[in-house]
Length: 196
Image (cartoon, rainbow, N blue to C red; front, side, top):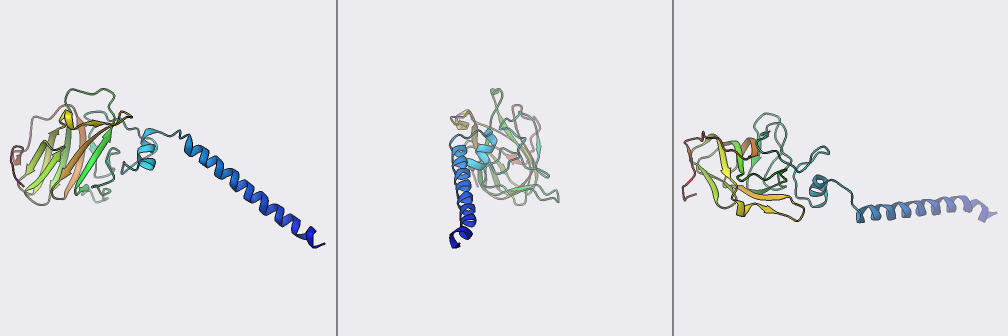
């Protein structure tokens, strides 16, 4: 009599264990044969992108300006950037980081555009190690820095990566990867200085 009373609970526990084991093997199979988007892979699996949404791709259209007061661009690395505050103060950039993106067609020249505010003077902004702008005074600036072709790295998946950095924290209001620089550049930006 005692054996009959324990049969159903024991069988139920065994079925649950077998079901969980089967599900675990299914998940391991999915991990082995990943069929995910490139953006998902860079965000969740490689942990290289800071922001992601399911409708994005890794492609950047040169000239499209991303308003970083509301929503961050998808091509930013995990380091150096804070999520934009809702007060319109932009996205704070504090150190070195990378941009990860793909291009439909690679133009002969590429630039990184920043619309930013420097809280302190003597701030250095760089794209790679050769393209540098020095912001002598506190204030708002529009900066176009060329991406030197030798510093534009491409991984095995065809995703480009370029390093960007700042010496002091700045608030970025907008940014873009563009193929045509603006001719109006702020006079307070010193592009040739060897200092800071």
